[in-house]
Image 1 (cartoon, rainbow, N blue to C red):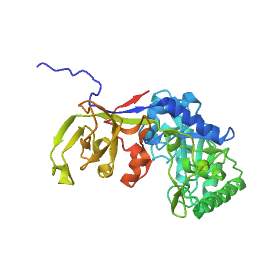
Image 2 (cartoon, rainbow, N blue to C red):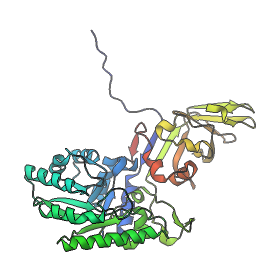
Image 3 (cartoon, rainbow, N blue to C red):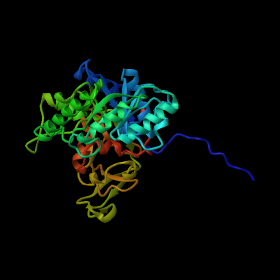
Image 4 (cartoon, rainbow, N blue to C red):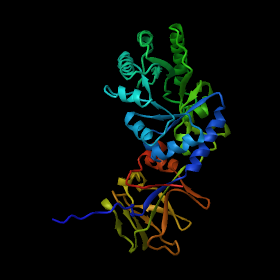
Length: 389
């Protein structure tokens, strides 16, 4: 029986994302210059590099001089090591039982917060024959998520004292509201963190890498920097809006000169002329008020285009903004191109990005979809090819 061989081929569906590695490297330099030489940067590339591609971004950051990369888990770290990335890698949400030996063999740095974490790693390091395998200890200073409760620290320190194959290199926490400038919780958490450090010191531990600051804290709470910071979103060109007294505030001291790294594009699949009174899309939620020219785009929520953009979203095509009309569906989106001259099938359309002074960015998408830029970027699905420029 004959078999049919199907050649491997590049994606030809005209929806793609362009990732500027030069912009990423520039953003890294901006953060590095901002925090200064005395602060180590852990460049966060978790969640597929916030939707930008973890391996490619990690390589660019390593070439730019990043000495630490932050990922969520062993599963995210392995592809980096397989691609020859030698930079130190911090597993920010710990590990599962059974992963500890791979963590030691791959030279990864796990975050721990329980005595059981310490015991598993100590046994794994002894089996592999590694002495002084570095770990970071996380304390829950008030976020109520991951980390040791402060009252548990003496037990964990005692476990570390009896673990000759481990070395406490880092001490960490995470701030719950670093973008809220008048949130009392920030000062409260930093106070708990400082008190926890004193407990470590009393047990004879003085880890050189102390870290609490994410992107928002890097910008707005310099007192949280310590000796390491963990920027993520800033590397990709964004930060959350800052608030005071429930209102968004801005100012020269509340921003970094970073630029978006990702541009998301598609092409017009079809152009259709519609009569007045024509319902468009699922549920007929949009009805044309006059004759209209509608462009069909081969992109939808399966690609990560948030359905919340169905009312109020826009794209850029032929140096014009064109509004999204009707509900975004799984694979298709409609935009009104009435009055835009020269519109044709295969015209390039910018979903996220800028051109000639016009811009649609992840902040705009987030505001319309009642979410945050993190989710907008991370949601761009893997069926959208990334092209690195």
